[in-house]
Image (cartoon, rainbow, N blue to C red; front, side):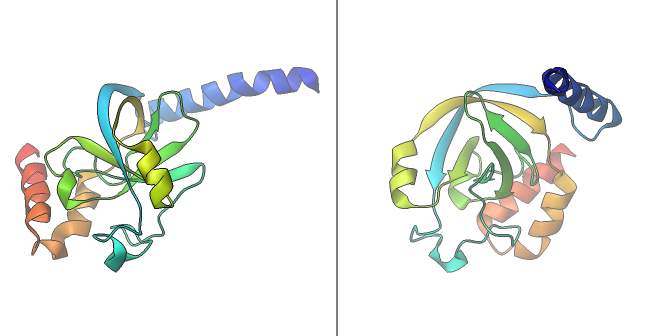
Length: 159
C-alpha cells in the first residue's frame, strides 16, 4: 500500500501531461511580476452584485477561488495558481478599474483579509486559458458600460 501512495504524484503528473496533449489543459505558462489586488463583496462598488460573479455564480473562496481580471487579457475561465500558494484561482469576474491595467483582483471573503493582501506583484502559472468567445458571449448584452465596450473591442481587434 505504501508503494502505491508513493506512485500517486507520478500518476497525477502523467494524467496532467496526457490532458495537455489532448488540449484539455494548455502547458503551464509562467507570467512574472503580475500586479494583484484584492476585493470583497462588501465593498461599496460591489454591494449591488452581492456575492455573485460577472458569470452569475457565487464568489468562491476555498481550494478554488474567484478572481477578477480584464477579460481581454485573461478571458473568463482562465485558471491559474500563484507561485508559493496552494490555491487555484479562476477568472469568473471583471471590474471596471481592471480594464487596461494587467491587474488581477483576487476575491477575499471580508475587508480584513482584503486589506491584509493589499497590492502584491506575484508570479503566476496559467494552468488553463479561458475562452475569449465565452467572454464575448457573456458581455454582448452589457455593452452599455464603457469598460465592457473596451474589453470587447480589444478582443475583437486581436481576433
